[in-house]
Length: 257
Ligand SMILES: Nc1nc2c(ncn2[C@@H]2O[C@H](COP(=O)(O)OP(=O)(O)OP(=O)(O)O)[C@@H](O)[C@H]2O)c(=O)[nH]1
Ligand SMILES: [Mg+2]
Image (cartoon, rainbow, N blue to C red; front, top):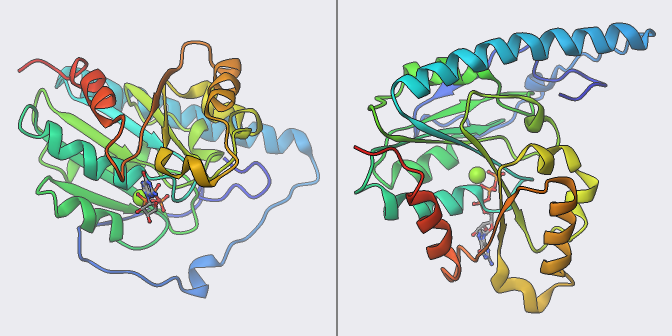
């Protein structure tokens, strides 16, 4: 959570089905009242309360997913690293093996949900408005709108942001952080909380490596410094290079039917 503005903690998220539009940002959506209290103590207490409430609901979500044997993955990254592109590549390779459903998180638009809808799997869009992350309550509401089957895969694409989403447990089994080679190999050190919380890191857009100053082994080393047990994949969604290894790894973790 942004501890300076507390964005997203006071607004109601909007759930949308693919094609329901809402493509425009209105100035009124950004009536964003900043409560910068003079007392640092109050700010910390508020943040703890919000996270405590979120954690309780996340545990309820987790219990639901475990009881139904739904493998739930939370995909996180900065905007544009390729989360939706990765889902578009991965889902067709898995959907014959296991039922797949998707929750898409964005501030506005249903464009990502429309892309997933084209794959023929159930999807719901959560528009967070001014909020910069998904939280456990939004997931709790969204799963009620989805035809979730037992022994299935649920992919959640979080709002593009390397900061706040890391703090909000959704009840997922794993956090998967996507980073692309255009972002700089120092990102794991600059956004350590995200990489520390992640179970898996996917370095995407390796097809662009010849054109950018990005040292993939240095990036991996930086990521391992903040999270020793991180699973690491390097791939290009565009060319398909490296995708097989990632999908094979995920396949082994799918619930047996
Ligand atoms: N060259 C190259 N471009 C890619 C690759 N993967 C994704 N892209 C492009 O990167 C851009 C962003 O991809 P998205 O999948 O929309 O990224 P995202 O992380 O879902 O973005 P947000 O939902 O806005 O946070 C698109 O123009 C993709 O075509 C890749 O492997 N190589
Ligand atoms: Mg996306």
